[in-house]
View 1 (spheres, rainbow, N blue to C red):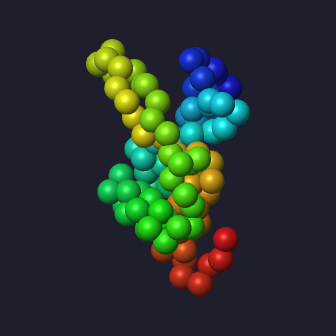
View 2: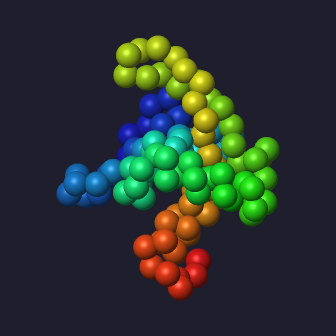
Length: 105
């Protein structure tokens, strides 16, 4: 595990898979692009899931959605929306349900 500026990177022993997590305020956070990579889908698909979860009030936006300043590859800082573990788990559940109808989380 590498840790730099609140980013935790986990890698499998063979180095073939990894996941980067943003840790802040005692919580784990991912942005839409990270979730898309983790769940092998597109960013627009993740956005659809998030909108549905918030619209149906499965989760409330205030405690689970936050903007953090992130440094991009170009070296500039940008405000990026991140989602807490609760949202990540809901999206994982919906992604599995989409691929495997009838599956319950």
